[in-house]
Image (cartoon, rainbow, N blue to C red; front, top):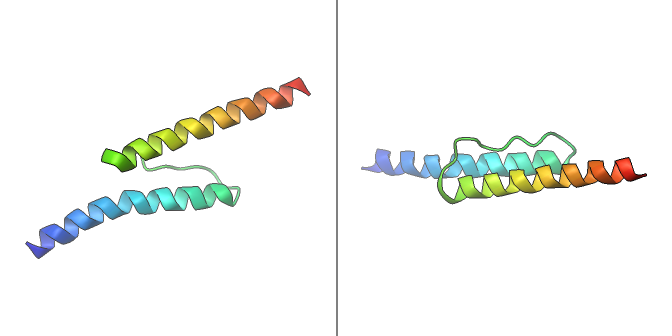
Length: 67
């Protein structure tokens, strides 16, 4: 039972740790690499963050073209 609980806790914590590393990397100027296999709320968060970053890149590129 304890082994199952530990495995379950790790399966929840791993995608969250990956999201944290991705955001920290981005804030340091690095690439954005989000967890691709995360499910549930973490997966939704990763997808939303990815979409937001893509929109930001597109808008930044459009502003640069206008100059």
